[in-house]
Image (cartoon, rainbow, N blue to C red; front, top):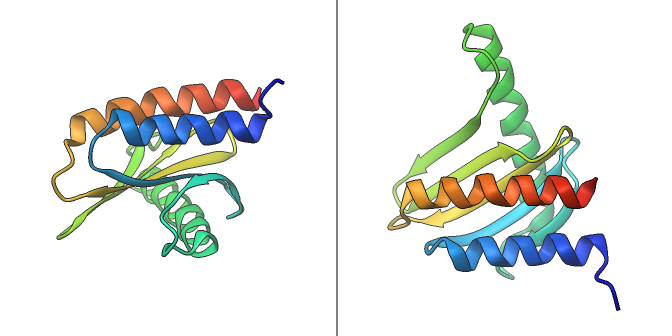
Length: 124
């Protein structure tokens, strides 16, 4: 039986977590703040992550344009206990990744780019 689009997206998010040690959670979110697919721990509120991700990406895009820095590549929040990274995954989607503090940022960004491209292909 062929996997559905959502199942394929879920698998891409699971692979991201396994390929980049330190990734604790990931989600594909629409720009209007709805979760499309997610790989989140049970204690994380899916709706809250979705709403905040959409808002942060929108604000990042606005700031980038306002300061004349061109198209936004990603939003990176570097906190004491880890990072939250957002990047576009297609025209109307954002890929959000939450990492542990010891995650290797370069590897996480590389795997995020790959996952975003794969998610974009699945969405068609």
